[in-house]
Length: 115
Length: 114
Image 1 (cartoon, rainbow over the protein chains, first blue to last red):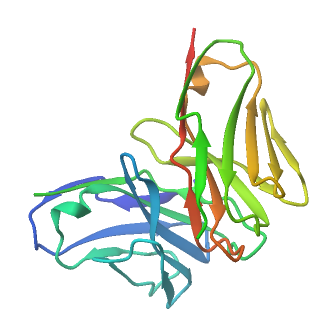
Image 2 (spheres, rainbow over the protein chains, first blue to last red):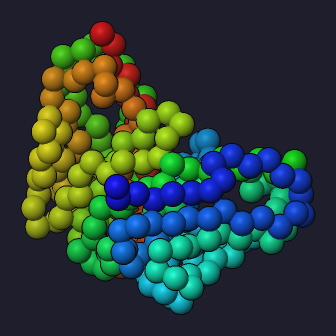
């Protein structure tokens, strides 16, 4: 089954404790992206990757890191989480969207709480 | 910078009604626009990707249109059903037209009452 998986699905942590949210897709997609969703602010893009070893900032990259060492995986790293990073996080993938665009496939989400 | 607005924020209709969801965007230099559905506690599901060259795209009871000149897209849902209840989001490429960076609207929460 074609899918995007995220782990963990739920996470409660404390300020400053480094954490990684994993994202994996089995569709051989070049493009992957991370979003956060907050009430009243909607869905905002954090980082995206056009292919292995190629990443770039979205609209809200501060406080986050990413890496793309394998095509299927795109982990999101919070080196020193803070309470304002409490949010619902989504990973997505698609074939290289370029100008034409392709439908994006979303993971089920990771609900992160930082206390 | 691309800005995407969806009106109304919430909509409640009786089952069987036809309805229209609206999406407007500020930067019309786009080649396509996407519509998504989000169920409570779940991820987004792509509904339709409409190219600017198409003007309209249909999938079952759903029909999306795109008018770049006016900066608007609409999602038409025919013969609505309770199972259509969800939040509907549209997303447009950021300025420059590339789909690497997308801007999402805040969504329309649709409730279809039996």
